[in-house]
Structures are given as structure tokens and as C-alpha cells.
Image (tube, rainbow, N blue to C red):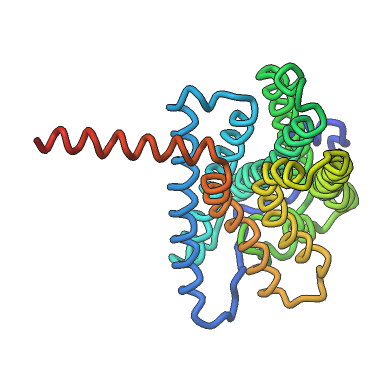
Length: 323
């Protein structure tokens, strides 16, 4: 990250602490029960997302561009929950609240990159649904594997570069007073506010990035569904409209699950108590990766049927072995 400081004058000295102290979840009664809940939620997230990824990899009929996007969503959910939850449990349940400066920035980079990709993956899936409804006869021609992989790769590149800039700007800050982070992880806002020199670039990035990562994707998804509803209104029968719209219900559930909690928390901002905000943010980051695979298994017929086949094959092999 030193290249962010190369353009600055040589005589500028940065005060970088040896460590930060993560102070979230202070004074909350029976908080250990919450960490037990996080552990079980993470376990479900791990099992569910690994299951979805395994089914897609093993079933050759699930190699469509749509399922490439679903695989990427499951991978991102798995990585984001794995990056966040075990560290949170270790920090608070086992009272390891000290984290080194470099480890904090690394932790921040991975958490924010993966959370950003959770949002951008929903855009990928909305593009798939939009093209399927608007161009049903040309869907397979327009939405190819190359197209889907290109969109996913672009979003990954965008997320990585954006978060590199976000974290890189932290290296321009001096920390000459408090090193206590008032959050449940190395959150960008609470960290840059500890800086005792000019925090304007970090504050500006903190304002721009949520719009780029949350605002624009949500606006695109809403606009895409306006187009979808308009297209469905032209279908002659109600049954056909309902059948077409049912293909979108899984994605709509994922969108509501991800955007509603995080939007409410950010809109309320300082109006809610600090611990309530911390718990709200922690829930908004762990609940979607936990429920996403359940939603897609039960609302995507192809994955559900493939999973049933695999279970039946395994039961048949087990019965043969017993004989």
C-alpha cells in the first residue's frame, strides 16, 4: 500500500500503531449466546454453499451461464462468511481483541471485497433474469458462457480495485491518539475516523463507495424489474405471466434479504444505538450467505432435481454395499 504515499512529500511521517483494539459488543448481556448463534449460522452457510457448488460442479446439466452465476454467488457467500465469522468469534468469544495494523488492513480488504461482490452478484443474476424475460427466443444466443464470465470478471476486478483504493487511503492516515475500533471487525468508517491528520480522501471514498456498491446495483435491479414487469404485461394470459414471473422469485428473495437490512442500518446511521447498529450490521453480513443456498435449492427446480438424484444414487450405492 506504500504506493499511495509515494506522491506525498518525503518529509511527511505517518504514525502507525502496532495494533488496533476491536471493541464491539460492549456491555450487551448474554452476548455469548449471540456468538453461538453466529457459529451455527456460519455452519449452515458453509454446508449450504458447499452443497450448491458441489451439485453444480458434478451435474453436467447445470453448466448453463445462469448456474455459473449461481456458483459464483455461492463461492462469494462461502468466502465472505469464512472471512468474517470465525474471526469475530475468535475476537469476542475468546477475547482476542488486539489485531496488528497490517492484519487489520488485510482483514478489511477481504471483508469489503467479498461483501461488495455479494451485491454485484445480485446484479449478475438480475441481468440473467432480464435477458431471459425480454429475449426468451434469443436468450441462449445473447447470454453465453463467455458473456457471463466476462460480466463476473469485470465485477470482481471493479470490487478489488475499489477496495484497494479504499484500504490504501487508510495508509495515508496517522493514528496518534485512540486505537480502539468501535465495531465488530476492522470496519473502514470506525478506522479512518481514528486518524488525526486529514481524513477527507477516506471520508469521500466512504461516501462514494456505498453508492457504487449498494446504491447503483440496487437501482439497476429495481429498473430491471420494472422492465420485466412491463414485458410480462404484454403476455396474453395470467397463467403465462405468473409462470414467467416465478422464475424471478428466488432472485427477488435474495435481493430483499441482502439490501433491506443493510439499507435500514445505513439510513438510520447515528440514530440507532451503537450496539444495535453493530448487531444489525453483523446480522446483515451473515444471514444472506446462510439463507441464499436454501432459497436457491428450494426455488431453482434444476438444482433441486439434481440434488434429489444425487441423494437417490448415494442411497442406492449404500444399499448395494450392504448386500
